[in-house]
Length: 503
Image 1 (cartoon, one colour):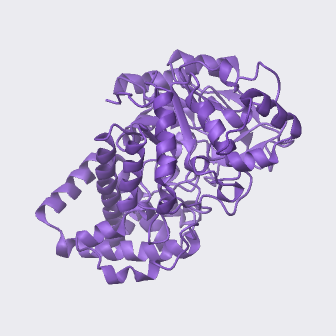
Image 2 (image 1 turned 90 degrees about the horizontal axis):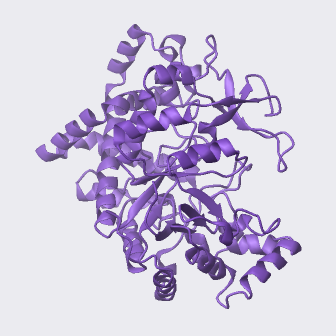
């Protein structure tokens, strides 16, 4: 569906300022919303909100429907007497610039577990009723997720295929035995999901009251080590004996990689999903729409056709294209929800069939200015080739920052850029590209916060292909100055993006 002309900022909540080592849903999240409102922004784009696993990537989560407990505000828990302020001091010595996940995670999880154990003692009748209502409304996923995480803890964090065979295969007797044995830990994980939900909904309503919508992100594939694959193995292409992926997701060899990319996620068993009326996907969309207003579908092309690589391969070379039932899936979703507030990440190897699927449902595609200045005048990322029903970015979480990109540009592309711009803004190349994005015809323009602040490569969020050093960038509250605010507001008003109605 086409969206009104508006603009916004890309910032994952882990990047927010906080005294406790990682951004959270506490006071600084509300101050960021205030900044968006003051600059007349109407969109806040975040990365996937799920509980991250090894590598801390929000695109590889233990659940496609749960929230990340690391985002829970400890200050909010103190206000509910679930924690005490003097218990938070352990987390106050970490860097304000980078999340040290290995150090922060165990300390924060210990505090969160402590808060869960106090719920029975301090919770009001209203809190208990709210938890019961949450459990009922989210029963499709929260019961299995809490059980899965409790089992993972009980088995030293091992992947579910390494658990004893009876529980890995969900045999009824083993399930009943482990549920009873792990009851307190199961409650802990359910409580943390409730608390994430409560805090996120309060923040979301605060944003809505200021005409700001949240754009969420849905990775097309889920991690093999996730509750979704353990609880619903029939939905995925798994080996019947080992339960490992029988077919793995990836992308074929191209200009950037002679061997392609082998992601390792199991591909979907679309025949089974179709027979269920795409129930798991509909539940997934329903869960996400409980948190966000608009959904960005990552690797959208995989819902038209996907690259499937057989088990045992170490590269993506020997895969093949397999058609996916994208039209049937989106029709089922539309029949359930009535409208499809979806943006399509249509980057990479895009065919006319992928474009047809996108256009059939009027999903806006993505335009990346960092990709615009190689090639000729037919480059689809050059602004004069845009259509209104699109979303323009200076760059995404997978790109270098604009300042870092500009410093590393080949001479040919730099010359093209300078010819296109006429001159570089005296405020810096980042403001030149922000201006280009905001003044384009694309209905939505999204700017990574790093670009708004003019930061270099050391502040990029993710470098694809590197397993370490990603996802940790944070900013300090003091950098959102009046000067930055005034300049962004002025450009937003100039580009007719300030008055969007986001109802």
